[in-house]
Length: 285
Image (cartoon, rainbow, N blue to C red; front, side, top):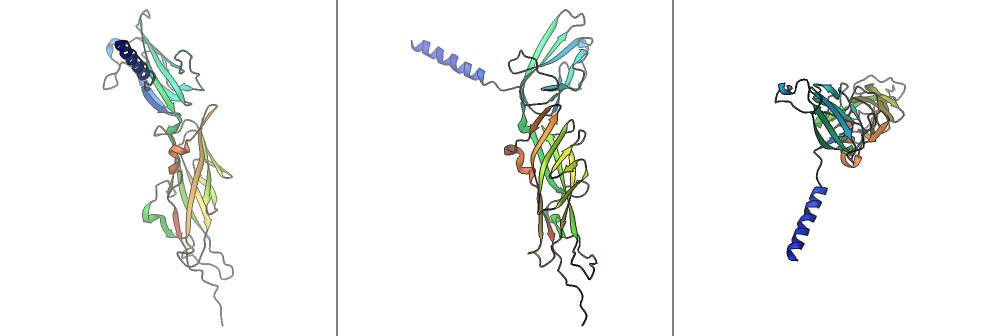
């Protein structure tokens, strides 16, 4: 009886272990990966496979239902044919998928089948905002603090207009640490203090939102804020821009950034805009 109990326990543990089998790889939604067979270290097709026919396929978690091209994934390379021993696949939404390849010999009579389990994670989407210069180079440390845009400028002797200051923030979207360029993406933003925001390159600003067309992974935002002259540091401006609600769209599928995982870098270091003295108009006695 004890022996039977031990065998039962071993079987139960084995089943549990089998049930918690990890995926062969974890990829990010929106990312593109090359799947390959029959390659050597130089990525050259081995001679004894030349002329063979390959068929690549993607299945859902049940291993039998075909995943939907254009909804679940896309082949960005041929994916089938003679000597097509590689296939580039872009993941369009999260979930568990199986990538399968069938290789047939040149005569087409005998085949070999292999498959991999891929977990596609939405947590690999990452929006990053950084204080930058006008061409997107990150600004940090003491360089974040500088005089306002009106410093040293001639102010007329009638009004009290001390001008404005222009600063820049660069926003980048990645998936699986790859620059995201294959679909539309966007985000909302909130400048502090209230400022005028426009795009100097890469995106379209509408209200407090930005949309970026396919083909670019970053946008540079131009932020113009009114100067507040007076005693420093009391009248210095701490300028920031916080991004939120980031997303990517591939075909008809929209996936949002998981801000509980990747939202920390949606708030960049702040610029400190140092105030100039609020010199009065020149009076004459």
